[in-house]
Image (cartoon, rainbow, N blue to C red; front, top):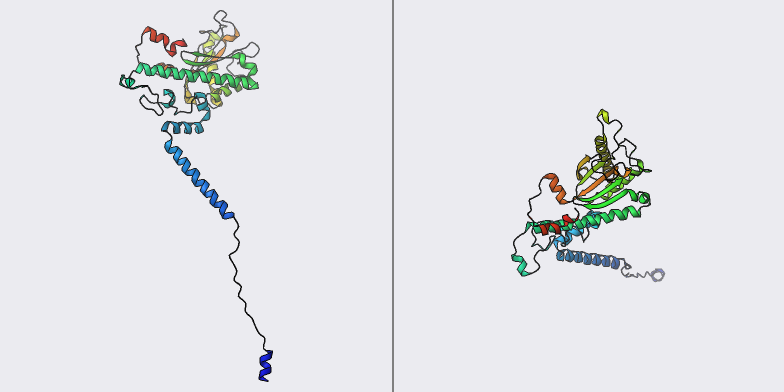
Length: 310
């Protein structure tokens, strides 16, 4: 019986399966490649920053902070070493962000000449205002809204800077007769000009002009003098509505009919106008009374950049 029981006992075979590691795929390779690429870009950026001059870094920073200002100023940015105005400072021996005066070893021993510095500053600023003039002309010509107003916008360079004049038209006046309320179409034009001047560092002067026709209520004390001043101030408010900072405006004045546009015909509608003057440094110095006395000869005065616009 015992032998039969052993024969009937089941035989159990235990098999141990040895499994391999699960399949991970190639995702880790992509992540590792991205990490290596990022590190390579980081070290490349560090190398570029280390090999770039301070002036170039300042120019790159200014471009991303205010690209419109850089495009108007020209060059590679505010740190451009080709202009004293852009780089700033008074040490002309610096190569970065300043203007090099010494072109050879003999020039390095020359004494510091403030007259020469002012000439260089005036030339650079005149070039910048010339670029601004072209910028305004391009914007007005490209925008279909202002094509019909192009004949009413006059731009010229004067001894005080860039002058933008918006003159009246018989069929399209800036203001109603005897009123200082800006017409809607001129309001849009002034705001557009204000937006363009936002990125310009120069200060502004606003002037209001009328024709020689006496104001109808002049006997009660309100004359063309008050009217021209009110119109200039109304134009200032529209420039501010376009984004111009209030601190940019140094002076708002009404000149009535004292400076006619058409001297031969003081009653011409074109004499009714608003003048926006983007002041150069000399004009600002005269305004603040800080213009230094610079002694120059007759030949030097005739060849100075300021004399060109007189």
